[in-house]
Image 1 (cartoon, rainbow, N blue to C red):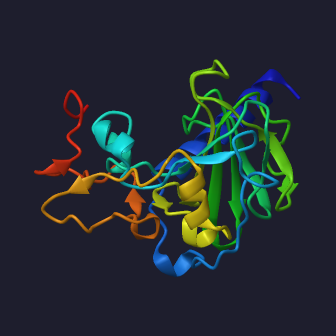
Image 2 (image 1 turned 45 degrees about the vertical axis):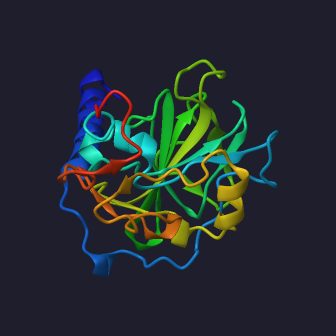
Length: 239
């Protein structure tokens, strides 16, 4: 293939990814309803030497402290699940699908993978240790190893974990993965380091205080958690 054709193919691929990021959000009628149709991204039982739930999806205290910076484009919400795991732990596809991106422009460095599933859902696996050997367009099966967990700080000591997101295929809507993934979430929340971990709005203290009740997120939408009376107070103020 000529250099010109290679460049053209590369430009088309980049344009396709860019289009996905700015495409209209898909309506509810086009998206599969949650039915615990997916599995966990790790094999075996959770534990201190294997993997644990580190940070939940939603209005977490960590996301609240960075709601205007790190999570500003995600309405101030942690739009995925963090699973603490030693670097190199095999990461598995949560469901059957097709590889949409390998090291795409979604963040979650140093490496990431996106898989498209039935029902216009996509899963993202972030902070992988090395670039996945998967190819865009490749079919994958639920439970298939698609990469290795890494560290968001690139040290394999500071913050080793997997960041898992469930989105619509337009990449504009982000869903709470809990009702989509078959797991004992109550036990995982107790066993992990996450605990409760949600930010209170003292004007509506019952809102968004359980793992199942966390809000959907729209890319680029207004902050959901600009609370007048937050608890606990954000150390040093919100960023």
